Amino acid sequence: MLEKFDIGLQLIKIREAFFCRQCNCIATEKTCRHPTSNRESMSMTEIRNRIRSGIPVPEIMMRPEVTKLLSSRHSKQSFVDM
Ligand SMILES: [Zn+2]
Image (cartoon, rainbow, N blue to C red; front, side):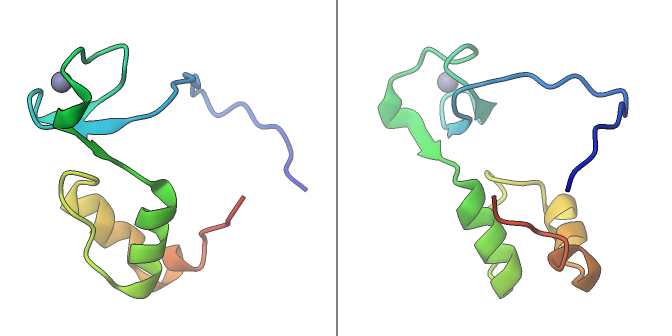
């Protein structure tokens, strides 16, 4: 059971994040008005599965240093499907 902790972070609700080839960065509908044909979807389930399986995560989805950290044995065991 999860307990509530105040860790000083403010959560921001967004619908969906995607990589926009025109903006050349991660964007949301609020930050990008380019046509949807410029978007690469980002599935957090796909990212978790890639890390668990040792499959590289494309840099447009996650910075390599973050992928490396999450790919460590200890971190892989920390993923929880919700
Ligand atoms: Zn854009």
